[in-house]
Amino acid sequence: MRQVGMTAVGGPDRAAPGGTRPWPGGAARWYRRDPLGFVEHAARERGPVFRLPDDGSLCVADPAEALRVLHDEEGHYDDVSDFFHVRGGRLEPRETQIAIGRAARATLRAHLAAHRERLPAVVAELGEVSEWPSAGRAAAYRFLAEALLRPDSPPPLRELMAQVVRNDVLIRPGGLLASVLRRALWARVVRALTAEVLARRAGPRPGRPGDLLDAILEAAPPGTPAAQLAQVYLLLFRTSVAPVGHVVAWALLAAATDGVDLAAVPAESAVRESLRLWPVAWLMGRPVLRAHQVGGVRLEPGESVSVCAYLLHRDERHWPQPTRFRPGRWDGPGPRGPWLPFGGGPFTCAGAVVARNLACDLLAAVTDGARLEVRGGHGRPHVAGIITPPPFQLRRIPHRT
Image 1 (spheres, rainbow, N blue to C red):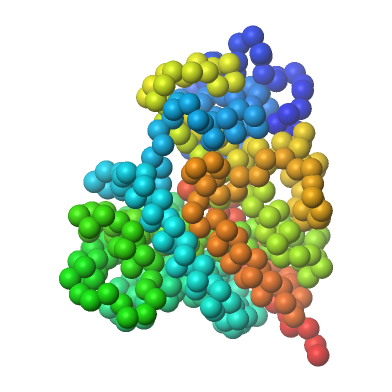
Image 2: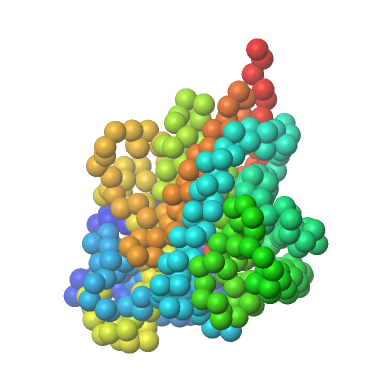
């Protein structure tokens, strides 16, 4: 498959940027059904700057233009992250978002440093045969559980959070019944977390290092509505668990597909390559505040721009054999192309380094002392916020001593 950057018939018309031409009927349905396939097609047909068919957002896969958007210093875009957009409005100001992100990162980083040696036991609990990517999410949650919600929290709340992970609510499963069940469970969790926020506000502070919810309460202004903080907690809970499990799952699946022996590859290189192929923040939107041009396309206030890390990471001008899983490309200093798996600029995920480090440690624990066999994993990934690999089975066969 040709990637962004190749010149061929159907490439961008520089006199009339691809972003200005309307899509034919049915394009919006295609994009909703298969967003990755659509953006790949659009980049081949219209070049690295084009409109998305659902909301007209300008999609950018040109490295120079993408970095200009993400590192904007001229006030062209809204500086408040939509990650904190919850029911009832967006949690603002930006300073509050930054404080919450830092507090969450510090809590999770301290837990990883203190309990890293538990990861082999967590992996052992998966058994010799495990179903992925749900096993990856389960392992990440099992390891982080006490940092996400301290042991003295109400048992019904802890059980609800375990249900969120077990029932794959973190990835927004499709289908009408699944959607109804997900919304019902999500509403129960929000109510329970709201009650816990109120209880913690009224009670004494914990006598030992707190959990993710304590970190949010410490960082947020005192008058922030409890329901908003409950929803922020859920957003951070989701992004602390699902991406880690998925990064490891993608590394296992891609290594099996391309014949890479993960036991002979540094876990850091495998994780970086997994994040290149399947970035967590694959499409990053920014609302436009001031009229300007991007890639020859004029944008007006009220519109939005989306930087597509998925396409940037597969641009063959910067990444040889861009669709292959090649961890060796991370050996040595480079050169390499743009790598933005957790966002870029001021909106890089606050927990990016912690998530990557945990994914490295978890992958190392999975591959240590065992031969791996992967079955299944065919078909297109599921995209709902993050890119979820198709289901596969992993068999870990311990080496004989």
